[in-house]
Length: 349
Image (tube, rainbow, N blue to C red; front, side, top):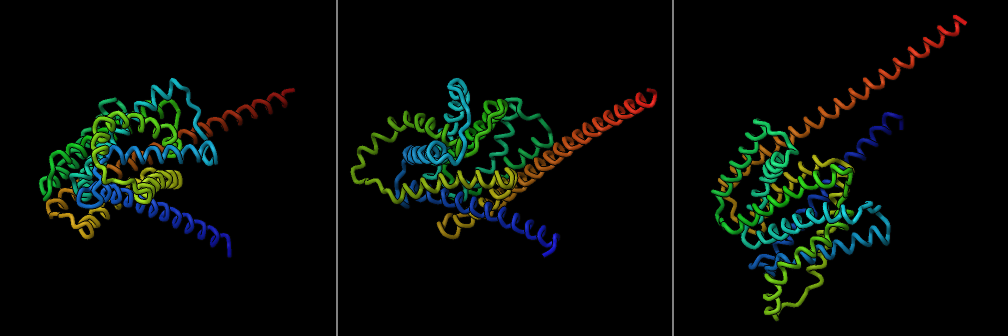
């Protein structure tokens, strides 16, 4: 096969691998969400203890991350001082634990489809908190887009057949804490030149999350668990559930590392629509036309936001390349002038 054929095969292989990573991430994210709903929902497995479930996930993920980094040395650890850990990782761990606790709690009260619709508010929360902490510049057109997303979610909420105020408050709280965590990662870690992949992130953050969750668990869920004498820990259910949660973090590592964060955002939109369809067709959750209209409006806003971010990244990359080209051109010009001066000096001698 010729050179052109080899190149074509390489491109095809890269595209197939990218689609494979996307499919794996969608499948695992889908599985974790549905599995958590199955465990926590009182009409299904009936184990409504979101703090306990999150702590099981954190202990399992922390253990596997420790083995991958310290024992098998699959991933290199990040050099981190005690002061940096306490000032940067601990606050992020606190926010993450609150986000997971509230989001898992929402599964007890809300349908999977409606939760995905509420999650469309994530760009709104991230942008608003970014503006508040001066990590994002205020732009009228971006804020108008954020308002259109919010309007879409409000319409979807208005059309929700099984609206539960407490469940909505839990999910909105989870979105707020998760958005704050993402902004804090930029402020506390990225600005200091520290980048954590999902494995090193779990290694440092998961034990911290476990400790933070231990306090509310002692007062909220432990007394109830003590009274639930009929419950026996099912290692198959909780083991496979935790394994799926850890595998999802590995999938994020692969997807972002081999493609881009934007690809994951687009894949996330596909996953949300699949979850809504699954929730309606298999779990038999009620999805109304007003639900779909509202989420469709929010979806368009999120799609436009992702498109704007992509254009901004392209513009930034183009500016960077232009600056590099100017620098290279300037260097070559100086070298030529230097060579000309040397030749002139030699001819005079």
